[in-house]
Length: 141
Image (cartoon, rainbow, N blue to C red):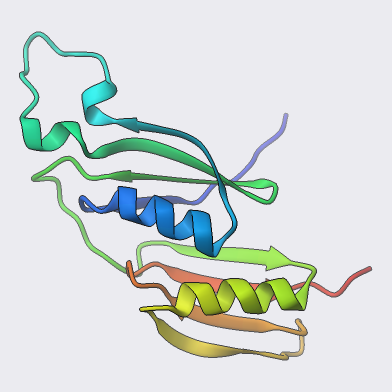
């Protein structure tokens, strides 16, 4: 059996913007995007127009990892910020710097990217969507 852990981010109506941001910042490939309006209709519930354009599910590929995200359905509880931290691991310190700097645009650096006892380049940043990231570089074996 194979088990993968995929980070899943929940947005509050700005998932489309987040998809474009992560596509650029993380050099991600968008594998699929579905809006609530593209889902099957429920004859017992007429979907409000303002919901149809929200993202029901998005799947991005970052290196060999999947990053998934969606918007909330209006009225659902939402708390931006520390509900998810994503660990991004690379073996290239230059790539770590590029990603870290891109994520920091409009965000807040918690720990600058720096050499630590476990990594030649590690840092923590909260991006402009309130998502916490740990960017780390593994030593090449």
